[in-house]
Image (cartoon, rainbow, N blue to C red; front, side, top):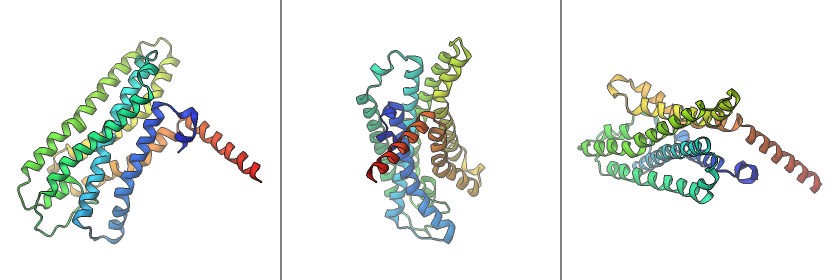
Length: 270
């Protein structure tokens, strides 16, 4: 809402941050209430349709954030490596199209994995030893052949996780090389500060996802799996406002101006 009301924040970077905040709100709304219910009451029940819906929203948001972080890295690449062409390239139509494309790609990828789960048969006790309806937890409950579904999920990791991560690595390689060419130390520090917040979130987000899904399950206990899932479903959305907003001078100044204007408006009413 601050980005929407403050004209000084009408830039591609803050538009991307507003989309990140929307996705974080959706993620915590999807996961946290049922997770707290499980923690408080130990054994709770969820319908199959409710479980699939929770998984779909969770996967949709995680996929979208992978694409969004990639788009944000491209934005930082243009801002630092091609500053003179930044405004002519990153126009409003382009960054809106990039966000819409991220939502569409994520929705498509998630639909494929969700349809695969819906075709599985569940004939056991159907007790999920997890904090929410995750892919691995649901596959382990199935009494039918899950090889095709698992192959699909592995293949989907390429466009959703691996390729975006490679684009981010390449972008930041060029960014670091460009920053090192700057002669003054203050100039290098200022350039690096514009992308340090994004880089921090990328490390936290991809680090927890890789630990949760790429390390063989035989080497992890179920408790560790649950703790790792808390990191990318609760901890990352929790720290994003601190990393991006509360440490950002422009957002602080805009918030102060908004509060001052609101105070003046109320005084005029009285």
